[in-house]
Image 1 (cartoon, rainbow, N blue to C red):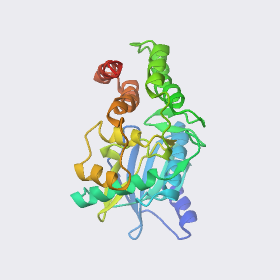
Image 2: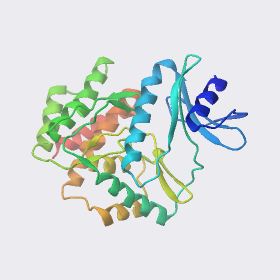
Image 3: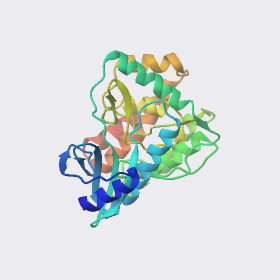
Length: 286
C-alpha cells in the first residue's frame, strides 16, 4: 500500500518520493493517520476502509474550496484514492502547535475574511460529511428552510432511523423554521465544523482543517466554536474587528449548536442525546 501511495505522491509532486519512515499519529474518530517521510519531504496521510473514499473526496473538495478563498493556512491536498482496499487522503504535512493570544486574534480576523466570500444562495455544489454523517447541501434561497430542512430535520430523521426518538420531527422542524423565518444572512463560505480540534497554528500562522464546508450563516461557525470548548477571547475580538456579529446572535446560537449536538447524538449516543433534549427545551423558551 505504501509503495503505491508513494508512487501517486511522486506523480503529483513531479519528484521521486519513496517513503522510508512511516509513523502513526493521532487522527480522528473515523480514520487512522500517519506521517510519512523520505528524509526530505513529509506528508500527512489519512487511511480508512474502501467505503470511506467518498468521505476523503468530499474533504479534499472542501479543502480546495477554502484554499481558493482563504488567507488562513489550509493544508494542501496532494492526492487521494484507493490502495489495497483502503481509501487514502494525502495532505501536506504541517508541524502544528498551540497559539499565543496574538495568534488567536489573527485567526479571528482571518475567519471573518473567509466569511466575506459569499454566494447568492445557501448550500454548495457538492455534498460532504460532518464527521461520519452525510451533509446535504442543495442550493436554497431561504435560510430558514435550508437550516430547518437540511440540518435539523435531516439529522432527526437519521436518528429516528436508528431508533432514537425523542421529539416530533415535523414540530421541531417547524419550530426552527419559525425562529429563523425572515432572517436572510449573507451566504458566507463556512468551515462547517469549527471546533478546537480542527484549528491550530503553523509557525504562529493560523491553520484550519477537517472542514465540512458550505455557504450559509457565518454565525454557525462562531456558534460551533463556542460549543465544545470556547476559543480564547482574542479570537472573537479579532473576528469582531473585521466583521462584527449582528444583534440576535445569542438567540440563534443554540439553534446552530443543536445541529452539532444532534450529530454527536447520532454518532455516539449517550449523554449527547440528553444534551440534545436540553438544547431543544432551551430553544423552545424563545
